Structures are given as C-alpha cells and as structure tokens.
Length: 280
Image (cartoon, rainbow, N blue to C red; front, side):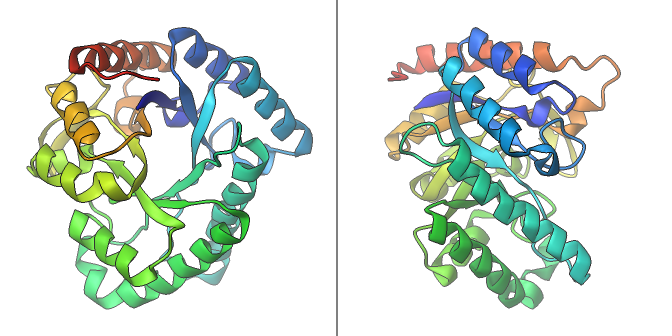
C-alpha cells in the first residue's frame, strides 16, 4: 500500500503549489479534484494545462491513482444531468491523458440521491452508472463509486448490490471508511466487505455518530489507522490510502490547506510504520 493525498482539501491552491507540497512531504501520489470551484476544475484544463500537470507529476515522482469527479448520477433535469455526465466522462478522458505509467487513475464519484430512495431509484441509477462504466471501459478506466452518508448508496450492502447488477470489471468502489465509522459499523466488517472490490480509498478522521458527527483532519480524532491498515492488508488491498479533508473542515475560519496535508502525512506515515507495512 502507498500513501496519497486528495486535492479535495486544496480548492484554492494552485496546482504547482499543491504538487510540490504533497511531493515534498513524502506522499507517494495524489488524487486530482476537477469539480467546480477548484483551481483544477475540468473546464479550465485545456490541452496545454493537461500536459503541464502530467509533467509536474512526473517531475515530482507522484503517482495519480484517482481523479475526483464527484457528480450526481440521479439528476432529473436534463441540462444538469448532461453537465454532470460531461464532467464524469471528461474525468475518464483526463485519466487517460494524465496517467503516470501503465496504470490508469480511477474516476471517483458519489451517486447523489438519498438513502430512502434506493428501492425506488435503484434501476434508474443502474442505467446511469452503466452508461458511465461502458464509457470508462471503452478507454480502460475504472469508475469507483463511493458510498456516502446521506446518499442513495450509504451502506456496503447497497454498493455491493450495484456492483453485482452492473457486473463490469470497470466498476469498483472508492472506499471511504469514515462514512461507515460514523454510523457505528466496525472497521473489520466494512473492510472485509469492501477492500476486495476497492480501486481507491479515502480516509479522514471523525468523531461522533451521524447525524451528530464531525469530520476531522487525519490525526485530530480517535480513528485507529493502525488497525485499519492491518485489516486492509489482511484483506488483500494493495493500492493507495488517500487522505481527504472534508468541506466541513475547510469551513473553519483558520483552515490552512497546506498544514492539513502536513498533519495528514504525519498521521498516515506514522500509522504505516506502526502497522509494519512496507510502502514499496
């Protein structure tokens, strides 16, 4: 396993600064965020900028395991849905262009919707996901669906059912354990269910129980990263463990995106050492 950092926590940081800081801290790779309000929003990435970002990653010896393109797949309004699908499919194209080596980044997304809509909208979601996965497959890119508290897919059982129905090797999971930790699901249970089908991960820190929970920067809370890493290794996961800083944390008046990346690295690198896990 290796350690990554998501630029989700760096919406206003120039990509040059982000790449340099992430690499200098010692991270093995990063996830690039391309949603609105970010310096790397997809529409701003013309051919020259894509080439420049690829060069920056190579120069700093950073892998690109994932692209964060989070866009709802359940929008009813046709114009809004078209924009969302443009971003998701554009993320697939970007993954091909920015790939560092033979492995293509996964394109991560959340599904949208609400938990109580699963039975009613499941077939609709499957149709939308199937279209996206077919496009990813045509380019060799995996779509990684993230179960998320408050979304239509909020449990391991739901995302496993989605994978079974779509039945494509190009649909896997972006496994963010924080969304299960805050509803009281044991680490051992969620890792056993999702590690074998995960293309990528997110980790935060967190305390409290949903809906009265608080997401935190890795290292600020009680989450047992050592135990989590040992479980992930035991269940065969060998990809990136990627720190993500939530919008909840970013809303703090004194939020410092570079300091957050630093604390996250210190937390995860220490946990890797304590767990006895070789980063390759």
